[in-house]
Image: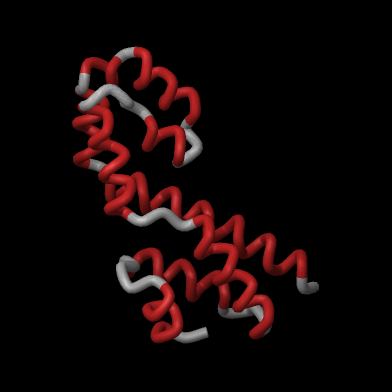
Length: 120
């Protein structure tokens, strides 16, 4: 798999995420790489979408972005405390790029494990 193939599938990808994807797929067969990309494409979250979910915290649905990224407990806490009085929501808005990147890297490792197990 090369950078051009990844860029065609994910035009908004950051350098760190691309480097992780290339590292994960370097020892995979072509079929494993294709399976990985299909699985990862379904699990990956766009930073703009995550930003929209975080902004929903200001209109009464605080924490939905945390629930989507797997931080269920923190998401419920944000929901019942109005985003910890909006301070937690504001901090998450500032750090949305890191939150999204961490989630996407975690999903890349999950997808790589699934792809290698399915086609051993």
